[in-house]
Length: 252
Image 1: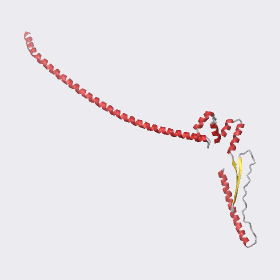
Image 2 (image 1 turned 180 degrees about the horizontal axis):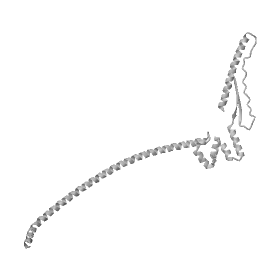
Image 3 (image 1 turned 180 degrees about the vertical axis):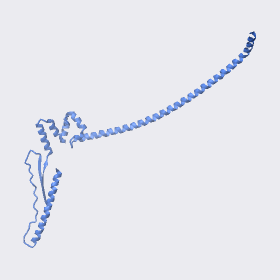
Image 4 (image 1 turned 90 degrees about the horizontal axis):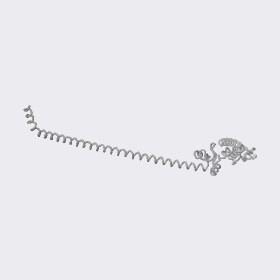
């Protein structure tokens, strides 16, 4: 609407300037003619008068405004009507209340940030999508974008949400940092455990090899001792065995 008014005003201004240029030419011609005669021409520009804008219907929320500007060479006048949105809101709420739509009437008034803040501070938040009371409060806190512009409650809630978001982001960043540090420590511990396991296996392998060598040495020693003892036994029995064998053969 404001663009349309500015467009009409610009057109009117261009038309007035064009008319002024044509009038100035006529006045110059008249001046040239009056130099050689005794006729005196009035050179003053007519005064610009603001138009009278009247709103006849008193049941509409509109008011009229008119203004004019006058200079030595140019005059300009205009008039517009202004819509009172607050008046419209009150009339709509009154009509809805008269038809028994009380919640709808309150919702209409809640479009005004002052009413919205007053209802919130009174502990009776404005309805939200059919919800009232504390349920409506919870929905409003989750959807602050739907609060009317200019509401102090909206500013406070947006600041709270921003603070919570920043705190969550900080907590998440710290959690990622802790997770990375824990993963690093876990990796280091795993590497150390692997090294310890390898070292232990190496020690066990060395111990097993040593034990095997000792067992082999013990077996070898036992075998030598056995052979030696057998040789000794065979050496002591052989002198008795031969004569006994000869005697047995002779007796037979």
